[in-house]
Image (cartoon, rainbow, N blue to C red; front, side, top):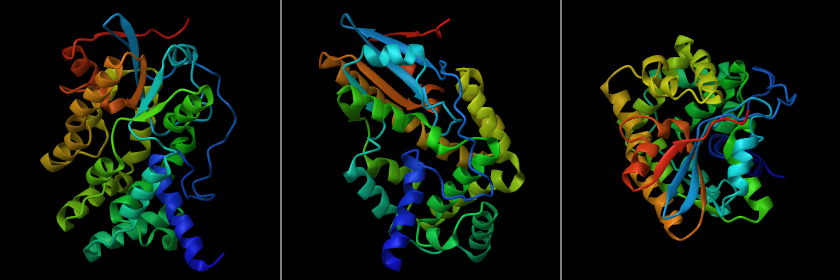
Length: 310
């Protein structure tokens, strides 16, 4: 294997760490999360969606998790078994999606200002990542991968997120797997092309890491998700340490709220085809004025929380 091939594989792993629930690139610092399995239990918010005499489901996911969290609990398993199709933001195993994400992450952009570049390089080293593996990636992607590596200090790892496990469950049961969004749409939100927007995205991601708030915020978000504590998740901006000004608030609104109408339309369209849908979307999309449960109610669904199994 030549050096270029090795580098591209390592860069691809960094991109995959964000979208596909693969282990981040950190080695022993911070150490990998202990893989001892957790008890199978219901985790995360789940709703039933009823319309036209048929039931579908909406599940709020977390892209990180603790060992065993990727195994669905009883209520999630029952909802999956009763569904005809599984709908995710993206299909994590679609080679076409992976090609788009990697190509966009490797597309050259203007260099960061020296001070911000120094901050990013310091964060990469502090997370025990290989600078050579990340050097050609979009700076915002580098900052996100640093956050994923640092999540290990909170006992969290992308390997235990739900999306990849749900995709495997769908394929294992022979159910169709549908993407509610495109890779191009997600890239446009997460990897800006304009220099000022790139700098803002990198600064926004690095600030909680540098202040020491990132690990505590990740732990709090994971605990809120585990217990389906939507009130805490809805108040994310007040405690995440990632919203310092109106620009940060607008970036979060673009990342979550502005995508929700199209996600709701996609879920409603699948249901209208006569199929029961198990739709799984990031839990932050379940909060705020444009919360997915609220938008689906506006589209004629009767939306009810599904209580955890006793």
